[in-house]
Length: 109
Image (cartoon, rainbow, N blue to C red; front, top):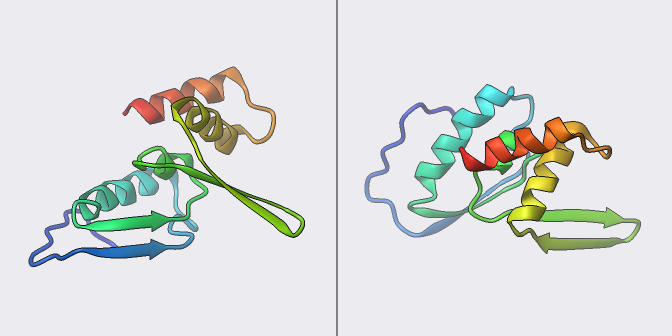
């Protein structure tokens, strides 16, 4: 979906499941999507699967899903864990100081 401004009339309660919503998007485009999702979240419960830190940083709740062989785990992240995960999303397994600082900036804005 593409929108710059979102006005929802006669919106009820509902749930939106969005899988890979950030596929083929730049960081700037992800921030635009995050703004649309923020507006939609006033009316809907949103579950979005994302691999971009720009989008993930704007979520009200952040869950980490990990799969190891046949076993999958889901964990709700606290603020410190969210920053570490956002930094990992930016830099990979070896998290740099710069990635942590960038993650903090994303999280605060």
